[in-house]
Image (cartoon, rainbow, N blue to C red; front, side, top):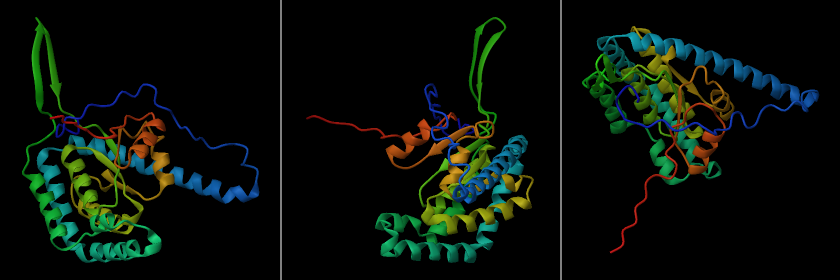
Length: 275
């Protein structure tokens, strides 16, 4: 469970394919491949450090009392408000690029990409509304005596670090990060390429807010490239659950190329009614 907020069944990981596309050795001696190789090594090192830091920060976050986690949320909300100009400027740039014909971005996606005005205010209010909810950590959901001296108990705890891949929706970055803080989980965010500028500004503001709280800024991190996402999918020692949003083929790709548990929506639920 995500800190007890939503009851998600963890998928059966049996049969998942690990690192389906490893780095091949035959190209290593070609001089033309060296820049790409060094770039990949640098990317791997960077993502590894981010994931390791998120892991450590998540452990400390999970140990904080509700009051401190709520205080962190309040500071995040204030930091986002203070960074409104920077965030909206970055979002305007993203929207302008997405609107160009050569970007080939569908109109519905362009609409979801916009982040300003009432949408911005409602998102910030959502962070503060989250503070009013009860603590999702440590809730006893089941307490049953099976036999004398043998008690079965189910208690909500944070998962650890969540790798969440989502579409080009800047407001989703705020929502996911806030839920992670409330539930004591670290989050590695990977947004759609169309929203990278917006999400960079948002995550920067979130980290600024966390710097003045008892929660570490490392509890939230942003990945911006497919290469970084591929590296994250290999880091089972630091990432506890991956949640991909996107097409069915993309979700299946993620599930087949990692041995980290994946919560995938696949095709959804379909019903057929015959009258």
